[in-house]
Structures are given as C-alpha cells and as structure tokens.
Length: 263
Image (cartoon, rainbow, N blue to C red; front, side, top):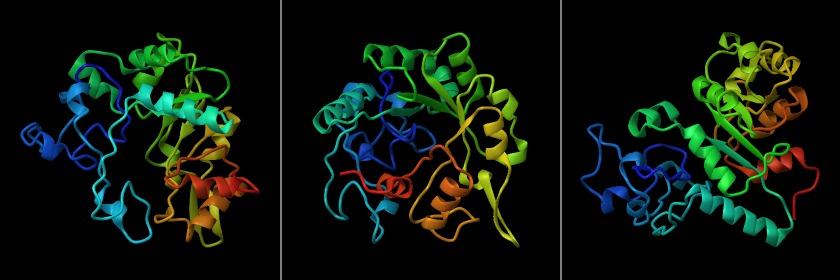
C-alpha cells in the first residue's frame, strides 16, 4: 500500500477482485486500473472482496455464490499469519507460509523501498520461524532474490519463479541463490508420439540440488501434455517426483499425495 503495508492479494491491482470501483470511482490510473500502491491501508479497509467473474462458472468454487454480496475484507500479511496460527492452535497443526513478492521493481520505483527488506522486517516482527520449509519466499525477479540472498542474508528459503521454455533458463545461476524453482507446468513435461515425457528441467534442477514446485494445478484447466487432472497429478507426483506444486484446489492436491484425506 501507499503506507507500506503488505496486503494479501494475487495481483498488484484490485479492480477484478474487489468493489473498489464502487467505493472510489475516480481513483483509477490512466490505464483504468486501481493499484494497491495508490491507497493507504485505512482506505482499503472500506473495500470488500468480490469473486472474479470466471469463478462463478457452474461447478467452480468462489468467494460467494452468484448474486450474493460478499463482505469479506482484505487482509494484511500480519492478519493472515495470525489467522493461520489461530487455526493451527485449534486443530493441532503447523501451516507454513509461501509468500510471493509481486513486482518488486515496480514498488521500488513507486515507493523507493526494497520489498524484500520490508518483508523480512514484517516476518521477523511476527516471529515467523525460518527452520526447514516453514516459510518460503518466491519471486519472478532475479534481482530481488539475489538481493535477498546476498545483501539481506534472508534466513528464509528462496524460490525462483519461472516462465518460458525449459531450455532457455539458467539453472546454474539460480542454484547460487535459490532453494528451488517454480516453473510453469508447460516447462516440466511435453506430449510426444510415445506419450508424456519430461523436458529434462526437473532432472537438471535436482542434479543441482534445487526443489521443484510447478504452477498452477487446476481442476478446470490442464497443461497441453495432460488430458485430465488425475493425469497431471500422476505425471507430476509419480513420473517427475516433484516435491510440491501450486494449486487452486488444495483438497484435490492433498488427495493426490496423501493415501487418506486429512480429517
């Protein structure tokens, strides 16, 4: 936000996921979009979330049913951490954090700050542990990850998000500062006349000691090499033996890797 508060959101804009147009009809930029960085947290507390239009398709989950008002509010990162801790205490579990820094170069230009440095301060203030994989930080931008690893000496493991062709990335460079990679599903496998085979990216990453967490596994949209969600999970888990993945359907993802569902 304008006053340097981390907000939990997939995007740096909010017009497609909130009712910001109704609350602040004149605050959009020249491109017609509403950016979090143009609002203070106090201003954002007046805004409600709303489901994306595509989430209201038959059979899909959404924040609310079609036609029903949704009054769920935005959360600060610290709110989310406290909520997860409360749920963990209630159910006797331990939930990790997987945080993506969105467009740090944009925010550096807008606010003159290092998102990475600010995130570390926020996590330390919340007492977030850095052992094992309890908190991972991911980002598409190399410069931010390199800064986190080098100058900022991040105690949290770093994941390099990737997009493009499997043979166009420099895994050797990533291995110098990252704990793992987050490639798109299209980068890890391909369909051939003989079936589905690996692109070699996963194997090369493992040779360098990198974890592989591809994105994004969905029920309604499969990569070109897969014909079903079951096949996507089968290739990812059994053939490629990936350590994790990003998914919009965590219950189905859990079923793919756990013999019996969690209670």
